[in-house]
Amino acid sequence: MSPDIAAVVYAIGILVLFWLDRNPEARTSKALGLPIAYLFLSGSRPVSGWLAILGLGQAVSFNSPDQYLDGSPVDRNVYLAFLLVGVLVLIKRRPDVQRILRTNLPLVVFFLYCFLSVLWSDYTFVSFKRWTKAICDLVMVLIVITDPEPIPAIKRFLSWPAFVLVPLSVLFIKYFPELGREYNRWTWLPAYSGVTETKNELGMLCLIFGLASLWRFLSEYREPATKVRTRQLIAHGTILLMVFWLFWMANSMTSLSCFLLGGVLIFAAGLPRFYQRPAFVHFAVSGMIVASALVLFSGSGGGVLSTMGRDPTLTGRTEIWNAVLSVSGSPLLGTGFESFWLGDRITKVWAMTMKGLQEAHNGYLEVYLNLGWIGAGLLCGIILAGYRNVTEVLRYDAQAGSLMLALFVTTMVYSFTEAGFRMTTLTWISLLLVVTAPWTCLDQQYTPEGAVNTSAGVDVIGVGVDATFHSVEATR
Image 1 (cartoon, rainbow, N blue to C red):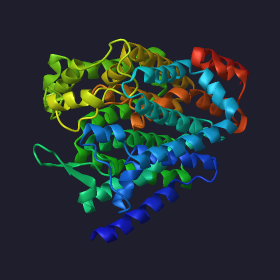
Image 2 (image 1 turned 135 degrees about the horizontal axis):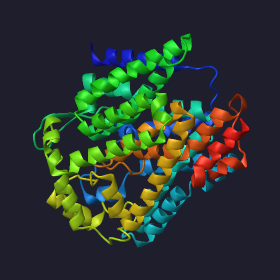
Image 3 (image 1 turned 90 degrees about the vertical axis):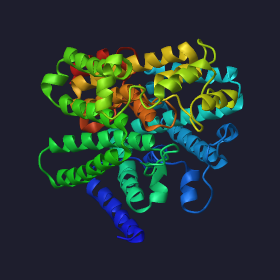
């Protein structure tokens, strides 16, 4: 099949996926298109990259510290437009937004500290611009969960970008290798990136959208047989088949391992014996995280890594960690928000490792480098509060809770060897969704006719989520 014919076939296939997934009863707002478009860009290439593919510009290649410092004016303006329009949408939903922020104080404090850290960055203005991009992540998530139909909105937010990006990745790799492949600078062997810019980003795309489609597939499979159910099973089953193929082509063992962990959790969370026993949930989650850490960081895990096709240095990551720690800034405060990979530091790290490196390949270390121990501690606060909320949702809504638990655990494990907490990444946006969405799932589960309940009882989720659930239970 010629590339041109393949492009037409895949375009038709993408339209068919949207047709199969349609649900006339779900009436989400038009504003949902904004975060969906944002997630499309976050999961693929920036606008400048897509314009370059269309021959309307030149992609920015970060091969020098100055290029990484300046960034792309086109991308910067696009993110600014997303932020401004998103804020206008949230102003109209101000009561719900205020409620969510009040009930997620650890998240609010973290973003405020990130803003404060701009002051001690060596590149204050650059750091501030990057902070506004991070705020844009939160704004997009808030638009999703404050939608009049929040549960269908979450489903579409995680599904519709996948219907485009996953098939396009297959198309690029098979028929447009100049777009979907790159070459290792040392071995000159091909590495497959699909619609993203690196194979690790393709792995992240498969991880997040694969888990979302697996969740949708299992959820529909457990429902009574209907035409809508059959159509959606076909749609998400097709995405899963493509995701498995892309995992194989990308050879991203981190993402594949996390997908398998998340898949087990999604399946297990649908079993009453699992979600009705909080102690068993805590044991399973802690066991997965601890076991993953032991395999990766203890000397005894070398055999397991070799079996997975990875060396004990985690493909050079241990060398990267030693290099970045040797030039780190203040242990307490860090170098300032998103400021570590700037100026002289990035030059020194490149000299010790490889040119073009832009992350520490460890999400926790990345936060420490930029925000110090204070920032790392605030991130732990978000994680603890988020986990509490997720497990409570699981007790009362196993379907929604299973996805949240899977995304939460996989982000924790994924960040052991990748920068999973960086702005505009799929893993970070997923974590924000998991942390802020529990009140939405609660309201949709227990209020009459799916109406959004804005009662004051929801306000206690961030400071005592269990009390909210018991309060709602008492009024059923």
